[in-house]
Image 1 (cartoon, rainbow, N blue to C red):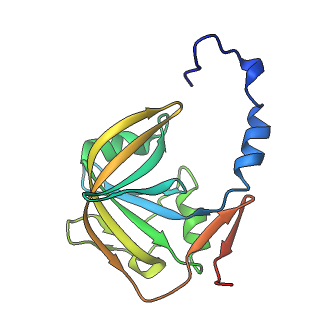
Image 2: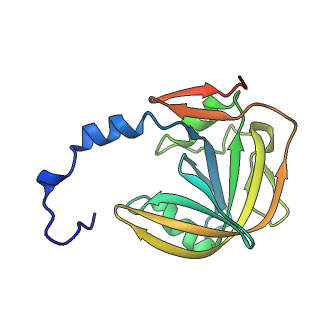
Length: 171
């Protein structure tokens, strides 16, 4: 991570303290999907997805620069964000597990643009073209120009907080 000029590690929290603090921020849970060079579906669980702009519609997602998924997304030039519903915590855990064939036992279809989508497990699907990337320390922020979006039958979204999954229910 790039530090401000004159800064040293003594001025930053420990990684454990930082992780504990940000674990208190509830995050929506999504699975980013795309296709690799061979046309095979690829996906990973993400919690750092934000709507960036309404006009034009842009979405931002943060990907670990050391993870293989970043290169796959940049090569494909397109990705889908599958906003998981509250009954899909198993899908979130599966797509967060490295080294497994995540699509082998997962119901998926091909979206309008040919991207793999997880409609059965999602409350919304947003398909994007990579617009630009921004350095974000040990992550890269991928900005997607929204090409299509759809909401699916109403189900509460899946939320991650305190290293646990929750359903979100109105007060």
